[in-house]
Image (cartoon, rainbow, N blue to C red; front, side):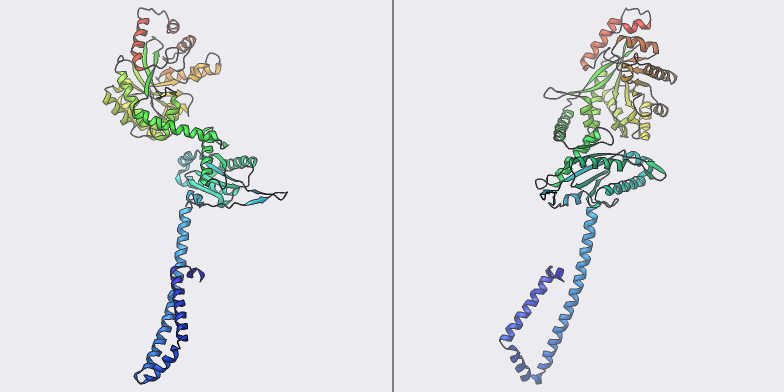
Length: 534
């Protein structure tokens, strides 16, 4: 009953009881009972005694009725408390793994417990936050379906709970988990992180398949009493992303430099957004040269950005940010529009080569976006060559096939970029139609000194001839490389030997000067052409 008396109804009951006792005491002091007896005796013939009896019985029944209602109210309060507790559990736990969620973590209160060492001195117990993110979870979903992915998450949750206390393991959503560990020294923190990775990465059998996922772990210690627990979780998250950037199954402790890195990235992201709005990112053009004739057959558009302070931002940096933040589509359309305008100033046979990000290959409207830009700027589709890396094709092969077919049907040329460095090159050649394959510069740089590399290049060029696909060699920097590639049957060359990426206003003069140099020059054989190209 104590819980009842803490409620509003319970307090009102106590108030009424206290009022009743007070009135009884007042009546006793004033001897109202004697007055009542005298009143009943005087008016007995008028039924006063029956009236008093009725009032007494009525009062007793009211009391009994009130007690019954109080019992019912208590049951109702217990049911409501149970429902509220159930709703609170649902709100603070993940429905799949039954682990506490992010909301529960934000509400978590850790007592400032202490331990006593061998000398009897007390020291505050360490609290370390571990952030865990699974690597390759999407591939598991693709292999065994979403139900299989759910089964994997449940098994991973059990394995993590087996290492840490179950009430200290949280699922923050998706494939991200957090563990709160108590009393770990720095050496044991690193060991605990390795144990987490080992537990997660062991094969898991689902629907007859042995599937594996990786894990990236970041961790940091909570400064008790000086900050919220969420701050330590945020730092552990930063360390986890830093570990993920260094490869699969890595673990890292938080360092202050990581926070600085995030701050710089946030600043750069803001600058990038403004730069895209102001069209401050421009395409530069690196020439593509026909190795057989020495003429310029195209230019590859390469994004270049110099910020307002005059600092040149590397393309992998700002393009990576654009992909992660969703700005890549706007950037792509803007750069393609500028490149189409610039290409109109070139001779009709000079192609415009343009790169497509792997992220964009998941966009079903990519082909429509390209056609819209071409139409708006008046560049014929046959003069555009789209370069796609092998890894861009494995994200969603079905969508990639539809996009490439639409581009092909419209007359756009398709080049497989960085051939030999991506995922299952031969499988991509068999599945999709390509007009050109570009041999990655890593093969070209060592082909003359490495017999195995040269054999690989011969095989690539032979494959291109067999499939009637034109081949381009990237990264040509020496005259001897040109002659060697010509002897092997390579069609197009690209590299610093022919020219670095240049602004649009220099491309026209570059073509003219090159044609001037070749005019009237009688080539005796291909090797002469090769050594006379600079």
